[in-house]
Length: 235
Image 1 (tube, helix red, strand yellow):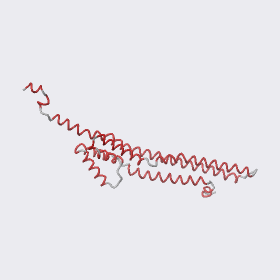
Image 2 (image 1 turned 45 degrees about the horizontal axis):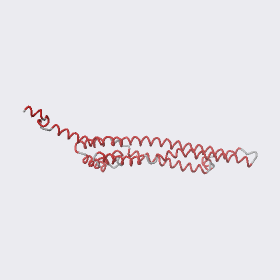
Image 3 (image 1 turned 30 degrees about the vertical axis):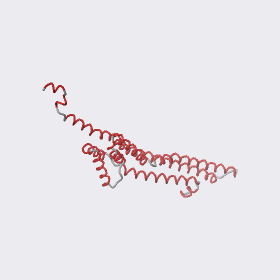
Image 4 (image 1 turned 30 degrees about the horizontal axis):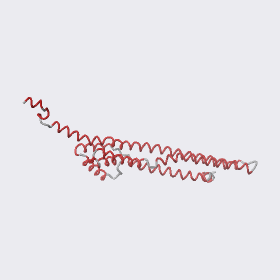
């Protein structure tokens, strides 16, 4: 029995498993391609935005970030998207910037983890479909005994082969889907670290220039004003 005969004799559930395997392979390949474009390190962008914010303010950092994204042909990374959302609301205060970044993080999480849950579902459904095909094949084998008192090996082999082929196909689909899901989730988690870094650090960038300016004003006060009555007493 060749491979084609084995597939055709395995029953209709094997075709369902074949369609499920095509979906798993397509989804995994597509998500690996998307995450590959988003996996660029955000360290240089974050450091450049930090320096520009400290020197010229959030508006200048936002303008430079937009200019860098327009010059770059690739898709902006999630960290850059969250950074842009925070800098765009920085003029309204730190709380507004944090709220904008939280919304951006939720949107980017949906983009990062799209399809991963579907692969997990496929990894769970695959063995169940294979088990169902196994039960159908074994039932078909036992039906042979009701039709003849002494079934031949060929008559029994049809149902048994259907059962085993479906079991193996279900396990293969589940293994591929589970491995792809784990690899994609690990890659998405690494990309999400850059978003969390921006969300945690940007409020500090916005408050530090104000603190520095306040310290400079205190240090620049006249001596008699700084020491108050003690200076007046020494005159």
